Amino acid sequence: MIKKISVAMATYNGEKYIKEQLESILKNLKSGDEIVISDDGSCDDTIKIIENMDFCGVEKKIVKGPGFGIKQNIGNAIKYATGDVIFLADQDDVWTDDKVLTVMPYFERGAHLVVHDAKVMNHDLTEAIMPSFFEYRGCGSGFLKNMIKNRYMGCCMAITSEVAKKIIPIPDNIEMHDWWIGVLCDIHYGDTYFIENKLLLYRRHEKNVSDFSHNSLPVMVKNRCVFLNEILKRGRIWNDTSD
Image 1 (tube, rainbow, N blue to C red):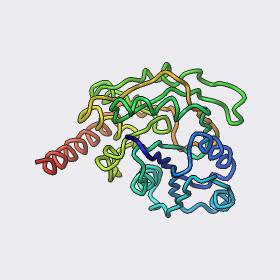
Image 2 (cartoon, helix red, strand yellow):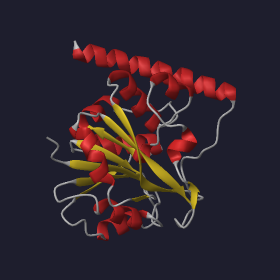
Image 3 (cartoon, helix red, strand yellow):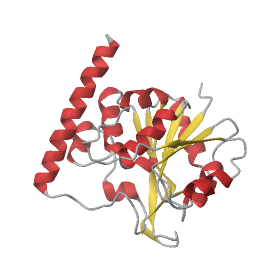
Image 4 (cartoon, rainbow, N blue to C red):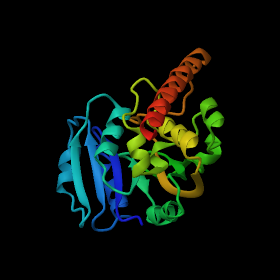
Protein backbone atom coordinates (compact mmCIF):
# COMPACT_ATOMS: atom_id res chain seq x y z
CA MET A 1 0.00 0.00 0.00
CA ILE A 2 1.31 3.44 -0.95
CA LYS A 3 1.50 5.60 2.16
CA LYS A 4 3.65 8.59 1.29
CA ILE A 5 4.27 10.75 -1.76
CA SER A 6 7.45 12.73 -2.34
CA VAL A 7 8.02 15.50 -4.84
CA ALA A 8 11.65 15.89 -5.92
CA MET A 9 12.37 19.39 -7.21
CA ALA A 10 15.59 20.96 -8.46
CA THR A 11 15.86 24.74 -8.10
CA TYR A 12 18.26 27.44 -9.19
CA ASN A 13 17.37 31.15 -9.31
CA GLY A 14 13.70 30.34 -9.73
CA GLU A 15 12.14 33.22 -7.82
CA LYS A 16 9.90 34.33 -10.70
CA TYR A 17 7.76 31.19 -10.88
CA ILE A 18 8.55 29.04 -7.84
CA LYS A 19 5.63 30.20 -5.66
CA GLU A 20 3.01 29.47 -8.33
CA GLN A 21 4.52 26.04 -8.97
CA LEU A 22 4.67 25.09 -5.30
CA GLU A 23 1.09 26.24 -4.73
CA SER A 24 -0.07 24.00 -7.58
CA ILE A 25 1.88 21.04 -6.15
CA LEU A 26 0.58 21.54 -2.61
CA LYS A 27 -3.01 21.31 -3.89
CA ASN A 28 -2.17 17.71 -4.88
CA LEU A 29 -0.58 16.57 -1.62
CA LYS A 30 -1.80 15.60 1.84
CA SER A 31 -0.39 16.05 5.31
CA GLY A 32 2.54 13.67 5.78
CA ASP A 33 3.70 13.88 2.16
CA GLU A 34 6.91 15.77 1.41
CA ILE A 35 8.51 18.16 -1.06
CA VAL A 36 12.28 17.77 -1.33
CA ILE A 37 13.96 20.82 -2.86
CA SER A 38 17.59 20.57 -3.91
CA ASP A 39 18.84 24.09 -4.51
CA ASP A 40 21.99 24.56 -6.56
CA GLY A 41 23.12 27.82 -4.95
CA SER A 42 20.39 30.28 -5.89
CA CYS A 43 21.49 33.90 -5.46
CA ASP A 44 18.01 35.39 -5.83
CA ASP A 45 15.01 35.06 -3.46
CA THR A 46 14.16 31.45 -4.34
CA ILE A 47 14.98 30.02 -0.91
CA LYS A 48 13.42 32.96 0.94
CA ILE A 49 10.15 32.48 -0.95
CA ILE A 50 10.12 28.74 -0.18
CA GLU A 51 10.91 29.24 3.50
CA ASN A 52 8.12 31.80 3.88
CA MET A 53 5.45 29.57 2.33
CA ASP A 54 3.00 27.59 4.44
CA PHE A 55 3.21 23.94 3.32
CA CYS A 56 0.00 23.03 5.21
CA GLY A 57 1.27 19.84 6.86
CA VAL A 58 3.39 18.74 3.91
CA GLU A 59 7.00 18.28 4.98
CA LYS A 60 9.36 20.91 3.55
CA LYS A 61 12.87 19.57 3.01
CA ILE A 62 15.47 21.94 1.52
CA VAL A 63 18.88 20.43 0.78
CA LYS A 64 22.05 21.87 -0.69
CA GLY A 65 22.56 20.94 -4.32
CA PRO A 66 25.86 19.52 -5.59
CA GLY A 67 26.44 22.46 -7.94
CA PHE A 68 26.98 20.38 -11.08
CA GLY A 69 23.88 21.18 -13.14
CA ILE A 70 20.33 19.90 -13.51
CA LYS A 71 21.07 16.16 -13.76
CA GLN A 72 22.95 15.99 -10.48
CA ASN A 73 20.62 18.47 -8.79
CA ILE A 74 17.48 16.45 -9.52
CA GLY A 75 19.39 13.28 -8.61
CA ASN A 76 20.22 14.86 -5.27
CA ALA A 77 16.55 15.65 -4.62
CA ILE A 78 15.61 12.06 -5.48
CA LYS A 79 18.30 10.76 -3.13
CA TYR A 80 16.73 12.56 -0.16
CA ALA A 81 13.13 11.58 -1.00
CA THR A 82 11.55 9.08 1.39
CA GLY A 83 8.14 8.54 -0.21
CA ASP A 84 6.78 5.34 -1.74
CA VAL A 85 6.21 7.24 -4.99
CA ILE A 86 8.35 10.16 -6.14
CA PHE A 87 7.09 12.80 -8.55
CA LEU A 88 9.74 14.84 -10.39
CA ALA A 89 9.14 18.58 -10.65
CA ASP A 90 10.69 21.58 -12.34
CA GLN A 91 10.67 24.95 -10.58
CA ASP A 92 8.66 26.87 -13.16
CA ASP A 93 5.72 24.75 -14.35
CA VAL A 94 2.18 24.41 -12.99
CA TRP A 95 0.48 21.14 -12.00
CA THR A 96 -3.22 20.58 -12.62
CA ASP A 97 -5.29 20.00 -9.49
CA ASP A 98 -5.92 16.34 -10.40
CA LYS A 99 -2.37 15.30 -11.29
CA VAL A 100 -1.61 13.06 -8.32
CA LEU A 101 -5.17 11.72 -8.16
CA THR A 102 -4.94 10.68 -11.83
CA VAL A 103 -1.45 9.16 -11.67
CA MET A 104 -1.60 7.19 -8.42
CA PRO A 105 -3.98 4.38 -9.52
CA TYR A 106 -1.32 3.18 -11.98
CA PHE A 107 1.10 2.63 -9.11
CA GLU A 108 -1.58 0.78 -7.18
CA ARG A 109 -1.67 -1.61 -10.16
CA GLY A 110 2.08 -2.19 -9.91
CA ALA A 111 3.65 0.38 -12.26
CA HIS A 112 7.25 1.45 -11.67
CA LEU A 113 7.15 4.54 -13.89
CA VAL A 114 4.24 6.70 -15.01
CA VAL A 115 4.53 9.48 -17.60
CA HIS A 116 1.67 11.85 -18.38
CA ASP A 117 1.09 14.32 -21.20
CA ALA A 118 1.52 18.10 -20.88
CA LYS A 119 0.55 21.30 -22.60
CA VAL A 120 3.59 23.38 -23.60
CA MET A 121 2.77 27.00 -22.76
CA ASN A 122 4.25 30.46 -23.23
CA HIS A 123 5.90 32.23 -20.30
CA ASP A 124 2.71 33.60 -18.73
CA LEU A 125 0.59 30.50 -19.47
CA THR A 126 -1.82 32.41 -21.70
CA GLU A 127 -1.09 30.54 -24.93
CA ALA A 128 -0.49 26.88 -25.78
CA ILE A 129 2.63 26.54 -27.92
CA MET A 130 2.04 22.78 -28.23
CA PRO A 131 -1.34 21.33 -27.20
CA SER A 132 0.26 17.94 -26.56
CA PHE A 133 3.88 17.12 -25.76
CA PHE A 134 3.14 13.44 -26.44
CA GLU A 135 1.99 14.23 -29.97
CA TYR A 136 5.00 16.44 -30.67
CA ARG A 137 7.54 13.97 -29.27
CA GLY A 138 5.93 10.69 -30.30
CA CYS A 139 6.07 9.56 -26.69
CA GLY A 140 6.04 5.92 -25.69
CA SER A 141 8.06 3.25 -23.94
CA GLY A 142 10.58 0.85 -25.47
CA PHE A 143 14.35 0.59 -25.41
CA LEU A 144 15.03 0.92 -29.15
CA LYS A 145 12.46 3.66 -29.63
CA ASN A 146 14.03 5.77 -26.90
CA MET A 147 17.60 5.04 -27.91
CA ILE A 148 16.84 6.60 -31.29
CA LYS A 149 15.09 9.58 -29.71
CA ASN A 150 14.38 10.37 -26.08
CA ARG A 151 10.59 10.37 -25.61
CA TYR A 152 10.64 11.07 -21.89
CA MET A 153 10.06 14.38 -20.11
CA GLY A 154 11.26 14.53 -16.53
CA CYS A 155 8.67 16.95 -15.17
CA CYS A 156 5.92 14.56 -16.34
CA MET A 157 7.40 11.48 -14.62
CA ALA A 158 6.75 9.70 -11.34
CA ILE A 159 8.68 6.66 -10.09
CA THR A 160 8.60 4.21 -7.21
CA SER A 161 11.14 4.31 -4.40
CA GLU A 162 12.52 1.03 -5.77
CA VAL A 163 13.35 2.71 -9.08
CA ALA A 164 14.84 5.70 -7.25
CA LYS A 165 17.38 3.47 -5.54
CA LYS A 166 18.36 1.90 -8.86
CA ILE A 167 18.86 5.03 -10.94
CA ILE A 168 21.03 6.91 -8.42
CA PRO A 169 23.70 8.06 -9.04
CA ILE A 170 22.82 9.56 -12.42
CA PRO A 171 25.92 9.49 -14.66
CA ASP A 172 27.26 12.96 -15.31
CA ASN A 173 28.32 12.21 -18.90
CA ILE A 174 24.84 11.44 -20.26
CA GLU A 175 22.55 14.09 -21.74
CA MET A 176 19.50 14.11 -19.45
CA HIS A 177 18.17 12.41 -16.35
CA ASP A 178 14.72 11.64 -17.81
CA TRP A 179 16.27 9.60 -20.65
CA TRP A 180 18.31 7.63 -18.09
CA ILE A 181 15.35 6.89 -15.83
CA GLY A 182 13.01 5.97 -18.67
CA VAL A 183 15.34 3.60 -20.52
CA LEU A 184 16.45 1.84 -17.33
CA CYS A 185 12.81 1.21 -16.49
CA ASP A 186 12.14 0.00 -20.04
CA ILE A 187 14.94 -2.55 -19.73
CA HIS A 188 14.51 -3.79 -16.18
CA TYR A 189 10.77 -3.48 -15.50
CA GLY A 190 8.80 -3.07 -18.73
CA ASP A 191 5.70 -1.71 -17.02
CA THR A 192 5.90 1.99 -17.82
CA TYR A 193 2.55 3.67 -18.34
CA PHE A 194 2.13 6.64 -20.68
CA ILE A 195 -1.18 8.31 -19.94
CA GLU A 196 -2.74 10.89 -22.24
CA ASN A 197 -4.09 13.18 -19.52
CA LYS A 198 -2.47 16.63 -19.76
CA LEU A 199 -1.59 17.14 -16.10
CA LEU A 200 1.03 19.86 -16.43
CA LEU A 201 1.42 23.30 -17.94
CA TYR A 202 5.02 23.23 -19.14
CA ARG A 203 6.25 26.79 -19.19
CA ARG A 204 8.66 27.89 -21.94
CA HIS A 205 10.66 31.04 -21.21
CA GLU A 206 14.09 32.57 -21.72
CA LYS A 207 15.72 30.72 -18.81
CA ASN A 208 14.61 27.14 -19.51
CA VAL A 209 17.40 24.62 -18.90
CA SER A 210 16.08 22.15 -21.49
CA ASP A 211 15.14 22.97 -25.06
CA PHE A 212 13.65 21.26 -28.11
CA SER A 213 16.66 21.62 -30.40
CA HIS A 214 18.61 18.71 -31.92
CA ASN A 215 22.31 17.96 -31.97
CA SER A 216 24.24 17.21 -35.14
CA LEU A 217 24.34 13.57 -36.28
CA PRO A 218 27.93 12.92 -35.07
CA VAL A 219 27.10 14.37 -31.64
CA MET A 220 23.90 12.31 -31.44
CA VAL A 221 25.80 9.10 -32.26
CA LYS A 222 28.48 9.89 -29.70
CA ASN A 223 25.90 10.68 -27.00
CA ARG A 224 24.12 7.39 -27.61
CA CYS A 225 27.34 5.40 -27.42
CA VAL A 226 28.16 7.03 -24.08
CA PHE A 227 24.61 6.48 -22.86
CA LEU A 228 24.56 2.81 -23.89
CA ASN A 229 27.89 2.21 -22.16
CA GLU A 230 26.51 3.67 -18.93
CA ILE A 231 23.36 1.58 -19.26
CA LEU A 232 25.45 -1.58 -19.63
CA LYS A 233 27.61 -0.69 -16.64
CA ARG A 234 24.57 -0.04 -14.44
CA GLY A 235 22.99 -3.27 -15.62
CA ARG A 236 26.03 -5.24 -14.48
CA ILE A 237 25.80 -3.58 -11.06
CA TRP A 238 22.09 -4.45 -10.80
CA ASN A 239 22.79 -8.06 -11.73
CA ASP A 240 25.66 -8.35 -9.26
CA THR A 241 23.58 -7.00 -6.37
CA SER A 242 20.63 -9.29 -7.16
CA ASP A 243 22.72 -12.49 -7.16
